[in-house]
Length: 296
Image (cartoon, rainbow, N blue to C red; front, top):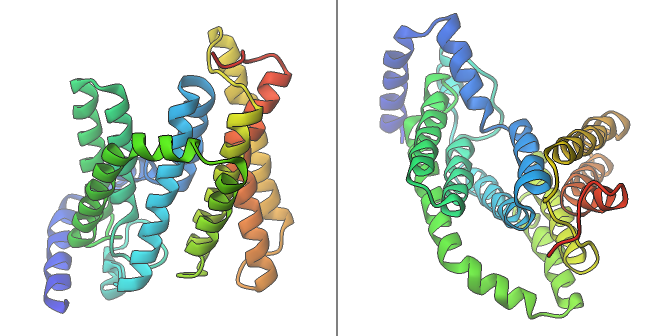
């Protein structure tokens, strides 16, 4: 691997020959579209304002993809370029490098949205987003080109499985009784923690736990539709997002830090509440406030 890493370092050095404050800022903005904080903006927008059913499925797919990425990173334990050459670092990044989570999740998220939109222009936009996000990781010196390529490949595999399996899997799950659905919603995230107890694994598993359990109950007890006037949608997003920030940032400040058993439990709980709020908490509140109609 040393020869491949050295090739990657040499390529990054060549790419960074043209770097400067303006380009650095541009690619940091691009790479932000693959960050956790960006997805905390994207998923509420889709779930509460555009298409709840699709948004819920996309969120679950995203979280499963992210959990697989965390597992693979810890399996391979590959360094990042700046671990071998600190001068390449133009942005912050934690953990192992292979495969690139930004690249993999860009394919799964933008690809799944493109499948939903079914427009050639959006497929072009999605492809551009995937390429730019992947390139930004190389430009910023936080991933080897091979990390990004691996992320794209794994993302394409998962997207293909999503396209083929989504409909029959949803049909099978909807045929299960409440307790079996709840069992799967609880067991799958907890099983993911058998492979890793890292902060990233706790984040992904916790959010998946909250989202999956929330979805089981939401489909039975919360009849929610995104329909309504534009100002209802704006109010939904603003109110829901403010409360989401209170959960995401407020509980982060209130709960003990990670790295200990107690801290890890509270991290799992915090992200479970994030997932639950996105899927069932906010829709329930919007119905209560009469900011959303019942589902058709």
